[in-house]
Length: 137
Image (cartoon, rainbow, N blue to C red; front, side, top):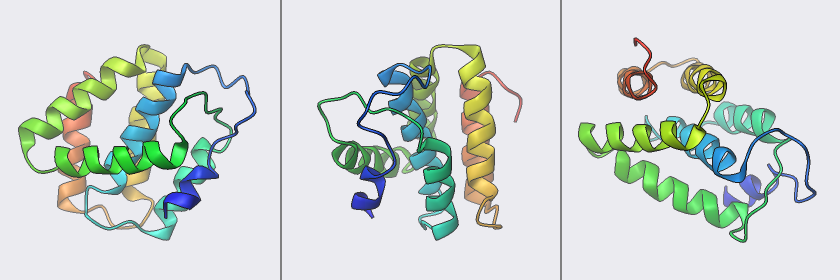
């Protein structure tokens, strides 16, 4: 699956209006949402590809390596409520703007339901994200 992620981003700079930390935060958020139910469905992968394919990647860390690290961080974050909250708060901080936070919360909600199964753990994770972003869940 990691090789698939490496094709998500353009290595040619594109004006996507995001800073690299914001791109990384968005990717961390979507990976966090994907692994919440401990299953990664093709529909989730397709959603991620669709939403991030126009992003530029401007890091010395490859997308593949970043996703591996993101997956580990997301898995660790899902171990307990306090670590999920801290992880979501960190993502919120890195997004930097209310406009991007609004887009990110909508993307997270869409990611949770794209596989047509809005599991209890996904609802709980969405609530954690919404609270970290200052939204009512």
